[in-house]
Image 1: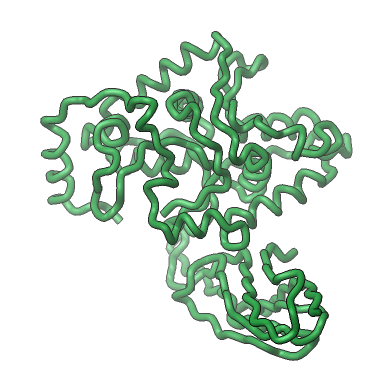
Image 2: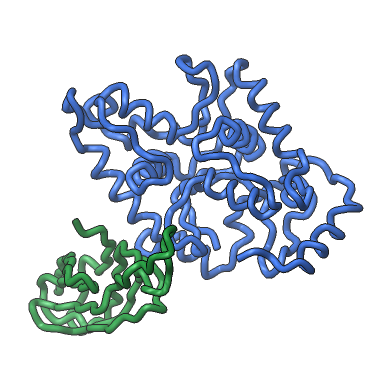
Length: 259
Length: 106
């Protein structure tokens, strides 16, 4: 539903005179989990009530499923994900030698399936891809985010920072306008979080399903009335790379639940 | 294939009140939405949920379009005997999905 015009003007007025408060100091960094209601926190914390676990158990099944000409499953090469995938999500996006640029976890899964099994590529935002990504990322739950330190990633991280700080769309609002300068305040009825991607893919009550960070970023882009990038666009990966370095030290909580 | 999470205590003492929780992956399509071509998306919701304890029905519920996707149902019962607790969800397309859990009562 498009926002009414008065809201757009109110938001514009709110941001027009803004001076940037700059980056959030390390000691003040808080996961979106901490800003949620106790009820939503309880929903996430209990695996029997966390709907994201439906995708995680599905991902566990897909991990074992043999596919393609080679008749291999993820497990044929990677073994038990509980050991082999532990900590992987905490350090993604990583540098991809083939494309000479950063790649996110879902992108890696797509490539791996196409090259190794080989099986038809999974579409972005498909239930299968979300399930596999959630299953892999779930193996890092509770581990602190430790961004990859490969120096070849630096230019892309800077690009991601550029997008984060750049005013976009008809409303001319940047990510930083809300998530650096006004976190903890309210936009409409919702508390503005610091935008740390700790729990993706995550279950949003608004979506009533699991979704990727790219879907979330599209939501914000549409919100400021900018043209969103297509799913799988390199810009999203650059932004994710920057967001993960910004969230360094916070714990992975995939599959998270967010309002 | 059923994608469901059911939660039953593994053990209980006879006469103890136990909490049972069941969640199933289901879109709960209301029938009021339109697709990209303007065509109405047909209603597909879970209409009925039934829980049986050793074959005896102990809890059931009728569900309606206003219930969110992936419905979560929680209720209590009294542990009487060791056995199997089965869960059945039936949707508009007539498809029944099932799950089960076992409990040991001492």
